[in-house]
Length: 238
Image (cartoon, rainbow, N blue to C red; front, side, top):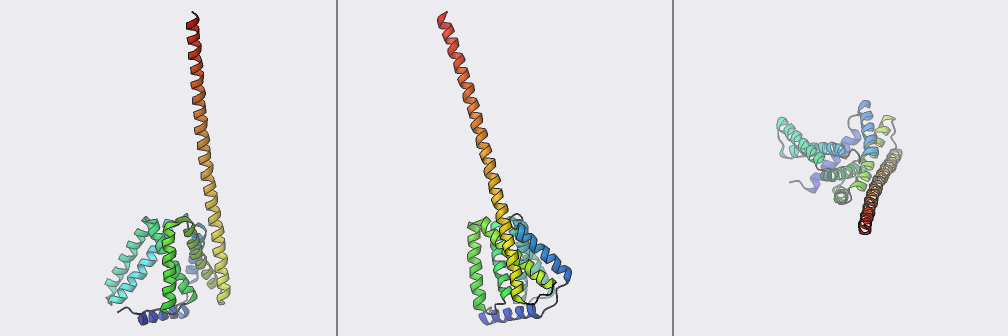
């Protein structure tokens, strides 16, 4: 069965791969940094695209986990991974709130990987926190999507930049990530504020136009009423 010791062993092996695994090629780091920057600055604007990427990654991970648990052969395992990735990619892109839910869980797992939490308890705490934030995102969609995409993009950008320039100190890497997150939050909230301002300005213009049209109609009606009264007076004098 899939019990706690087994989960702890999987986490330990994954952390060992992260710490001692293969070196990521420089072009891949550049692409990762660019994607992280785009997500960090324009996460809300590109929420369907970000959700699709998240659904693809989550689906692939779930497919690999299922294939590992059932101990299937390579072809069937690849088919499971491809099917899971495709289904979650489509669902995340079509249903924005579902995609945002997966995005929050992915960011929680990203935090787990970044701080190398090596036991089931810490994984469970982070997972519960991710689920709570994911549920809240479905209620307060736009502000929390901004926060989550800034976190995800900032961490991706910071880690990629740190690896490109050869930084090994985790505190410096964390500082780069924090700077990216802060920039993403500022830029996205500023863009959202301007969008709200433009929307309110358009609404104000529409209201003014409606009031102006109503005033013109009332003026025209008053002129017609005056004309009718003058005609009545002329007829009475005759």
